[in-house]
Image (cartoon, rainbow over all chains, first blue to last red):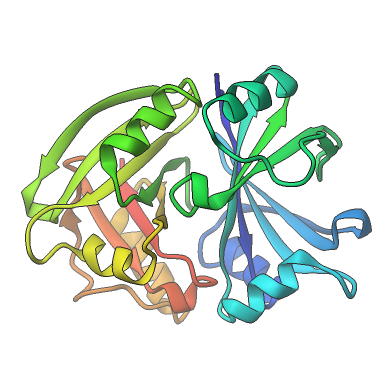
Length: 134
Length: 134
């Protein structure tokens, strides 16, 4: 069912410093900072040959990333995103297996403009999993 | 400098349950459990179309994964691995930038039989980064 690993999202306490490090010390292809007010984040995409890294930084007062950084002041991996062909079918298969979907189970439009759902970390080895329909 | 994302490693408290979930609920291509005594882990590789997920479970008394699971009983993402062409050159570039390499800086043979180094999470946004020479 799951397809490609779409991205790994890393919450960072200093977006410019993290971007400079990936661009300089790690020599990666680092994009510009993009504000996404609907998601409460500023994002920088790092393009690797086979997938993407997303650097996440809080934007606005109710950012979900702010709480994560309070608990993890140095930053940390926030979530991983798997691609699926059919998000409602994936949701139904997962909930039938006993896994919990965050929110009311209705796909939202994610940071890439595509439908997404998040799965409960407690049901997936402490890992927040995003599913994105591609 | 960095190339492909080679894998995302997830420490899990129940290897068989995690494998069954990735095989069943997530419908992924899940390999057999492989003991790696030199690394203190039992590993299951999950092959996605563009990269791999590694499920890690402690093996033996001195497993680095046991300590991680003590702190994170539900499991969690343990590290991410980037590929590089020339590991000594990558190490020298990173240490010149001020980043710390774990251990004495000498590449070890990693879980895939290739030379690896780990970078200090405090220097990389709270993320343990493995570099693998391919």
